[in-house]
Figure 1 (cartoon, rainbow, N blue to C red):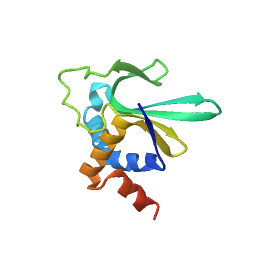
Figure 2: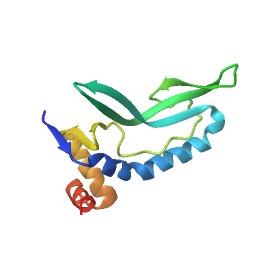
Figure 3: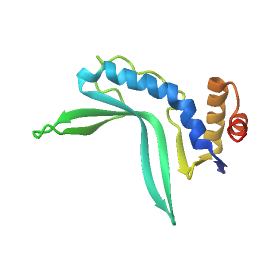
Figure 4: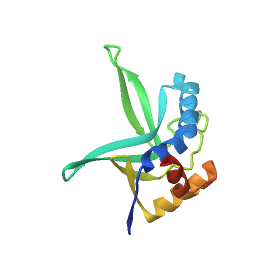
Length: 138
């Protein structure tokens, strides 16, 4: 499958994601007393040749917040499924399941991910990715 580079795409994708990130942070504030935390994005850095590439995965990553004896907080990953059925359902985002590689502000995606991101852009911004990129570069 072909890889597509979207120049300057990282900033646009993160701008489109911001309202969902805010909803998830509000959700985390509501469930704070449970000791669980929903992390909406997982970031991994890898050395690829002489470059450092950031991989960003959108999803649901559940953690339990535990205090150590020294009162230091520790985050323990508990999985992708809601750990307690009594917790309210978290807000949905159209980004779940999408992964992108970020290289110096550009993003590298498969054709399928490009189509998904383009549909998300049309739904949220009422414009496709090309239009948003053109506006940003004006």
